[in-house]
Image (tube, rainbow, N blue to C red; front, side):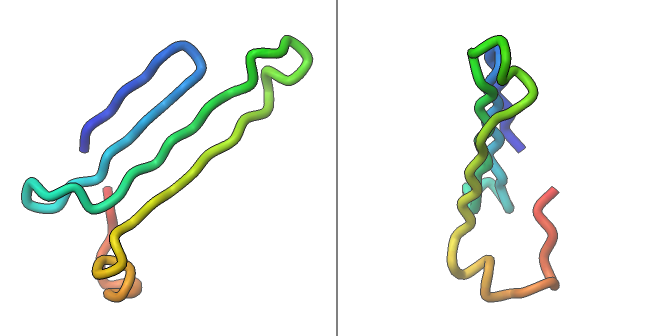
Length: 58
């Protein structure tokens, strides 16, 4: 797993045998009143999703 962390942002890259198979990004709000909130996105390669619950991305 590759991991990047900047101030209120986080980016994770999932790998299986050196191949990038997914990612997750999170961005927290810069506004003082919304510091507790954020947004995230997840992407996973289709062929990995087709395995259902048999593969866990750690």
